[in-house]
Image (cartoon, rainbow, N blue to C red; front, side, top):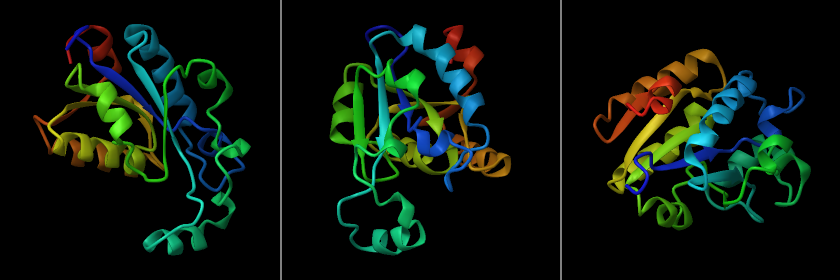
Length: 184
């Protein structure tokens, strides 16, 4: 690791998850955002924001998924896919994916100099979980900042954190205070 902290990946802090009128609203989005705000200064340029986007044409099981969520079949420039305003201005590095997991070649390349990926964002029980597992399988140390993430509900958030912590030492669930104090 170059700076001792790793790369912070801020997962999907998008309007579609922040808007209470959205079918994909994450109730504790603002709490996760508060945690992300506190993390950003510690990572400087070592931050990548991600966005979940709908594919042009869903294939395989994604077809059934988008039959359930047709509102989401919008192009990448649609307002729902934008990061929230506060994070849009912070996003110097942005990685898009049409999958839940954001462990893309682009993110892997950004993590490579550090061998540590710190995850925050939404939703713990979907995109954060999918990203953490894939990165761990690739041999990257993963830290999931529990109080800088939010799930679809509190129970799902807690279950996802529990499952990820079973992957120790590949994945460790840590707190914001531990990361900020440099003792994750």
